[in-house]
Amino acid sequence: MTTPRKIIIDTDPGQDDAVAILLALASPELEVLGITAVAGNVPLSLTQRNARMICELAGRGDVRVFAGCDGPMVRRLITAEHVHGKSGLDGADLPEPEMPLADRHAVDFLIDTLRAETPGTVTLCVLGPLTNIATAFTRAPDIASRLEGIVLMGGAYFEVGNITPAAEFNIHVDPEAAEIVFRAGVPLVVMPLDVTHKALTDRSKVEAFRAMGTKAGAAVAGWTDFFERYDKQKYGQEGAPLHDPCVIAYLLQPGLFTGRHVNVEIETRGEYTLGMTVADWWGVSGRPANAMFMGGIDREGFFALLTDRIGRL
Ligand code: BDR
Ligand code: CA
Image 1 (cartoon, rainbow, N blue to C red):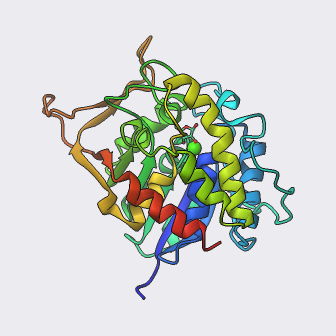
Image 2 (cartoon, rainbow, N blue to C red):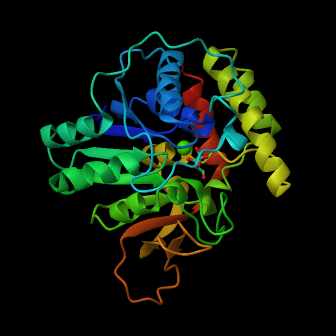
């Protein structure tokens, strides 16, 4: 087997973040150097705790979890309990974590790790607002060029928005951070709502997780059951979009996704469009491409991968 790819997962769990983390921890192709928690779906005190609960559920109490920024760079924190529940992980009953939180700020961990590892060997998988990453880039501009790349869930183009009519949650929460990251010159792969709204569960997919008869399978089924009530009501469709697992699935099987290498700018001033990802899908701006912006997914292939890997836990 080839050497596993080194990744750091930056996250605000969140049920879909949790499934993404389980997918990564179940996959031998990936070596998780650490998990950095950020404020987003719920406050930092809960996201760092949830990240540790998820590691323990995967039997991986050895993974280091770091707490990062407790709010956006310049704005007030917006959270999403209306989607994820009060804990961020409503839907499964997990015990309080026993593993300790790592004794270092997530931003310090990101900077130290990227300076210590061989340049071009570490990929950041970003599943929440980009606050930790932009803060690290601002404090240590040298680290951006040391990354292999960033794969992130955020933004939308044809699907427009979920937290506002024009913006997706992760980008809207901290648009200034997103702007820094999108302008950093790092190879960027973006999983916007255009993709993740096609990564929909349905009854048989959820029941397949439950039928595994494992703690992880039961948790994934419980989380998606909880999570889907909001999207079903909102979009009138069956199932929940598994946004964040698309990031990890891309690292494992990039062929599941299709997209275009285009220019993407972040709206940081719009009265109605704050946090919009202005993706030049039609190549009309003349601005240089800075992101691989995905649009399509092989849904059955995605769920086959997810079911196979969660079944190994
Ligand atoms: C994103 O926002 C959060 O609610 C989810 O965890 C996902 O990262 C989807 O807009
Ligand atoms: Ca998330």
